[in-house]
Amino acid sequence: MPIIHLTTFIAAPAERVFDLSRSIDFHKKSMSHTGEDAVAGVRAGLMELHESVTWKARHFRKTRYMKVAVTAMKRPFSFIDEMEKGDLKSMKHEHYFKQIENGTLMIDVFSFEAPYGFIGSIANKLFLRKYFEKLLVLRNDQIRQYAESDKWKFVLMTHNA
Image 1 (tube, rainbow, N blue to C red):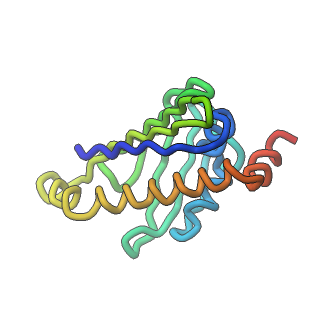
Image 2 (cartoon, one colour):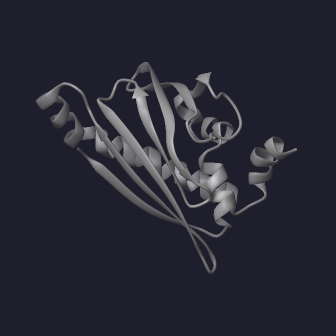
């Protein structure tokens, strides 16, 4: 099973980074290039423990659906979301947030497995790992850009008002 491990430094408080990371609205913005939309479950706001969302997006020239649930949460230090239904055999995304003196270390541990046995394992090695890593790096950069500027207010303040 491939595992992607990323660490991103963000010059912002852990609480802000944590909330951006679990925001449905921010996720849609950061993945707009795939046409990502929440079509069932929680469709706006912040994901909470035991809540789920079904995402609709275009990947590999096909519209795909993935139902993901938050299975663990320790605010503002960590949360885990896992695939309940979708094209992959499994997917688990662990999010960790460590407040340090000048900001936050955001750590992603993303594990997944393609279906179809041996053929799926070849797909994992040939392109899926690189594809998912590129998506995560892009998303983390977007989180960083929003958290380090005033842009985060346009996403998070609408839910706290």
